[in-house]
Structures are given as C-alpha cells and as structure tokens.
Amino acid sequence: MITATSTWVPSVSSHSPGTGASNLNDNSISRWTSGKPQAGDEWLQIDFGAVVNIRRINLQQGSDSANDYPRSYAVYMSNTALDSTGTVRASGSGTSGVTTTINLASIASGRYLYIKQLGTSLSWWSVDELEVTCSDN
Image 1 (cartoon, rainbow, N blue to C red):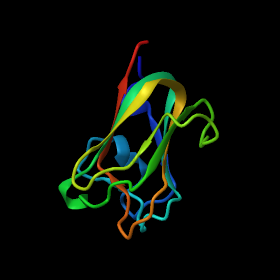
Image 2: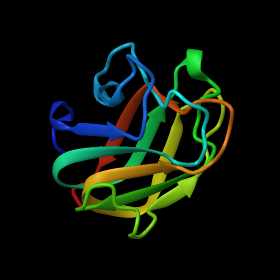
Image 3: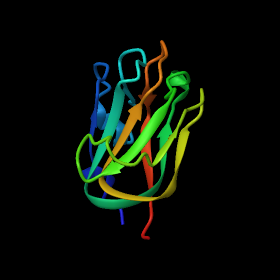
Image 4: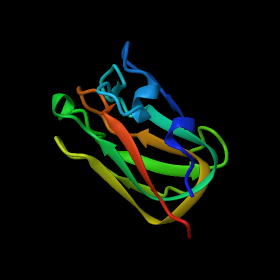
C-alpha cells in the first residue's frame, strides 16, 4: 500500500515564490513551478516515508501553465534521497497542455520517487498536482 498523501514530503531543485514543493501534493489551486527556464538540471522528489510500490505517475498541468511541461525526464525509485545512480524506471517527454502520464515498465519499489527534468526550454517546469498509482504486487 502507499502512504497517505498528507505524510509525503516533497522537495524540489528550485521554485518561484509562493509555489513551493508542498504545492505538488496539497490539492489546492496553487502549483509548483521551477521559477526559471528549463535548463536540464531541475528535479522533484517525493519522500513517501516508507517503501512503496508504484506503477504510474501523473504530473497534472493546468491551463495557465500549458507550456510548462517537462521537455525530457528520467524517473528513479530508491531508498536513498536524491539518488539518480540507479535504474531509470521510465523516461520520456511531456506534451503541451496535457497531464504527463508516466507508466513504469514494471512495478518500482522505494521510499523516494525522484524525477529529473533533463531538457531545455525558455518555459518553466510546472506541476499542478502529482498523483501516484500504487501496486500491492
């Protein structure tokens, strides 16, 4: 089972004032945004507080940030914070104006979900809400 969203601890590489990491999972009208053009060094992390099994991630995008999708990303699961040395569980790119749905090739287990934005764009990277689909297997 996955831990309660209210116990998740999000962290990010950067953010614009008023759009901090907590906006990733607070179900509010505020979003998280990197606050700078995409340079390929942005990241977000969720500490679930315990080992979980996941199979899908949705990075929801709002209409006011339709062009703030990740140009290229890599997804990692680990028991170590900010760990990008392990297996890439999924990679790809987002699309303007729609939620970026990331389907993992197989169920991934770990305490930390780490997503690196690897592309470049004059647009910021924004996420209105992060959703995770868990698996009991």
